[in-house]
Length: 66
Image 1 (cartoon, rainbow, N blue to C red):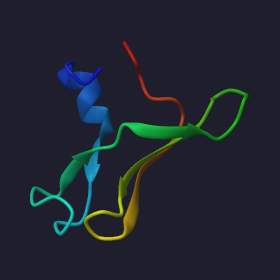
Image 2 (image 1 turned 180 degrees about the vertical axis):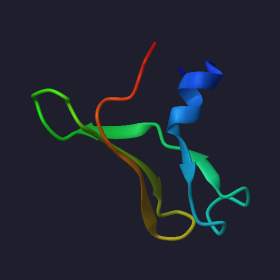
Image 3 (image 1 turned 90 degrees about the vertical axis):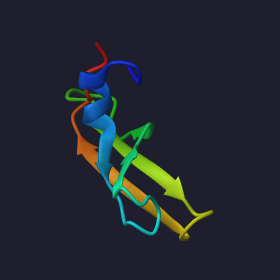
């Protein structure tokens, strides 16, 4: 999905500019919140090495994978 521009754009989310100068980062890490439909996910970016932050980029139904 990282090489697919459409799928990648779903996972590129805003972040503070002290983490990434562009203000956008790819949030690939995720956890499943529930075992039932719509199978919600929480996508996040662990940035503790730069700003001691964990940025939540998305919380909602499973994002497209194809």
